[in-house]
Length: 96
Figure (tube, rainbow, N blue to C red):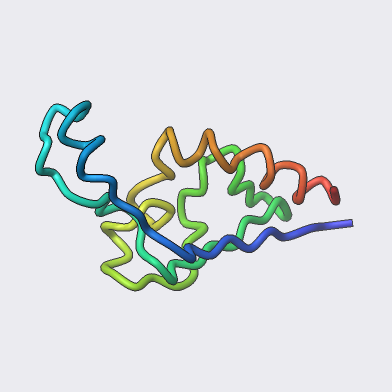
C-alpha cells in the first residue's frame, strides 16, 4: 500500500528577544524559507522518494516564490525544521 503525507504551514512565530540574545544577526527577522499556507505532499512511490531527499520538490502550494521556499524545486527542508517533523512524515509514509 502506498501512502502520502500532507504538511501545511499553519503558523509562523518570531521571538525577537531570543533572536537578539542568541542569533548572529539579531535583527534577521522571521525565517524566509517557510510561509503560513505553504503545503507539501510527501510520497514514496514509483521512483519518487521525498523523504530521503528532505522534501525537495514536495512543495505543492506556496505563498511566496516557490524557488525561495524550502521544499520547493531548488531548496530542501532546513535541518532544524526537518529534524522536528521528519519522524512523523516517515511514520505516515509507512502507514502509521
